[in-house]
Length: 303
Image 1 (cartoon, rainbow, N blue to C red):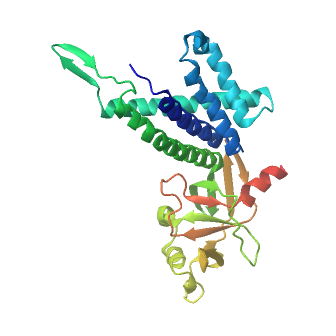
Image 2 (image 1 turned 180 degrees about the vertical axis):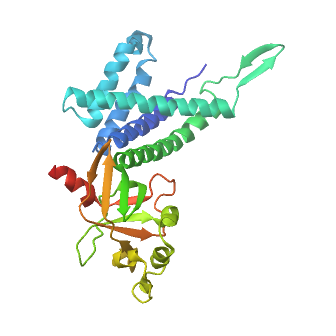
Image 3 (image 1 turned 60 degrees about the horizontal axis):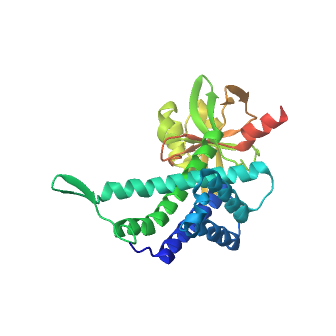
């Protein structure tokens, strides 16, 4: 049997580079490419070491763990014990996920086993299964991209879940309940009263508003030009805002009271307006209102 050690080493070097890079991405480590290259060289050198029988001690689990610590220190440096432990744990997690993904994909798509005379046999060459090499070479970058996207999604989901609140809007005798998202990027204010504006999805809550208010929300520029004696008309305001470089206007309603609840703690919002938007706010239905941070965060900080 012939082993192409240089090819095996190079493949392992590429895999280690991808795994360490993904670890840096997940943990938001500012590691230079030079340090990641050095760490990848150290990690891939393990393949050469285990070829020699006298160096079989390096195959022991404890030695492997010590080597992984050295790899992480090479890549990200040493700040404190907890910092290193976190790096090593994530490195193993990324390795298990990526390796498991390639293993599952390969055995889902391909089988090397054949039945000869009632006996199951497998094929093998000096370089290993060519299909396996193809899956590893193409699968690692693909899984890196897939894992990176999933990490981004998890980060966004976590951020969204931490910012979700329950909103209770009181207008006269009508009470409207909504699931809100506290958006720290929301800087929408009424230019006259300087009150903050939260945005409500009318695609979900239109039935809770009188037809006069629904019509005004659809045709903002008609507010004040048509005669209507509905008591809520006097509550309407027109607030300008920018959307993708264009100046637009939003119909807003002044409620009697806005309560915001998070972690079973309800607070009364400072005076604000409710913008009536016909644009869907969440494609996945996680929330139907965007809450101005001043309506909740400043009140909590003050208390």
